[in-house]
Amino acid sequence: MFGPNRFRRDARGLGDDAFVFEPVSGSRWVITADASAEGVHYRLDWVSPEKALRKALLANLSDINAMGGRGRHAFLNLGARPEWNETVFSALGDTLRELEEAFDFRISGGDTLRTSGPSFFAFTVFGEVVGRPLLRSACKPGHRIYVSGNLGGSAAGLRLLQHGTHSEKSHEAWVEVHLNPKPPLNLGPVLAAMDRDIAAIDISDGLSSELGHLSRQSACLLRVDLGKIPVHPGLVAEEAEFIRDCVLNGGEEYQLLFTGNFSEVELAQLRAIAPISEIGEVEAGESVFLTENGKSSALPAGGFSHG
Image (cartoon, rainbow, N blue to C red; front, side):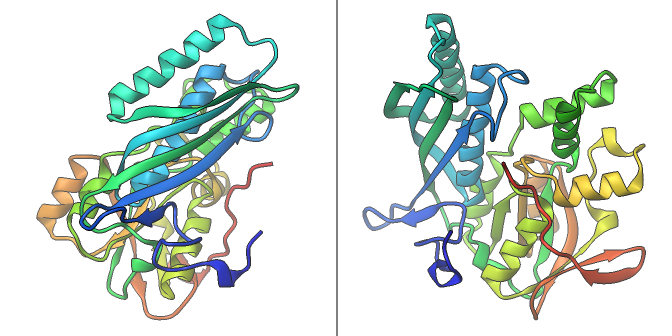
């Protein structure tokens, strides 16, 4: 949609998870806007409207987290299906209140309209950063690469939903990861408070794709080891190629991928918030390389795409 010349490295234009601005000296905020559309991002034969709303809002809060911010204000434009009644709207309201209480932000405005077709949830979220924003351009040679949580479950869950087979316990867990993500929303602000160069991005389009974004924005080479990437426990008994594809290319994980130099004390602090795995290092150069079975090769951006 936009050419490379439109991308910037200071989060004051295209190129990061959110836009950074300082309304007054000493005050730093980030803004993100993202929409979730029925038939593209969710299907109502898979999930209820309130669960679709929950995931859409968490995806926006995840973008704020990836910049080191805490969500403070959210604005919702809601496109409601013609048949939605007061019961549906009440459930949507209950979900918003639950999330407000859980994550200490407020729904501060928006608009609701009846559509003649598919429903949608479009959010604009404002977050506050205390410390230094986490920019995709902040990778430095010598940084280590880390990821929170485990990967692959969301992609496996989506495939099961698409094929209509999810009867086993492990299958149910995959579907739950896809439909009800749990981004580590306290992790980004702690990283920002360290007030130094730390790069971050949330994993919404797939690990291979997000690594490519960090490499391009930072003009660095990122090298990751496949054997160090944390795999969703329900996947470990599956075929190797299936695991590999889910872990590297599966989207909508909303875990945090970040780079930096941390002491053991700092890593312990981070691991008290979320599981953290070291998966590689940043070097001078360009592109992304994957070490697999002792061999290193270029890793193309094969991430998840909606549609």
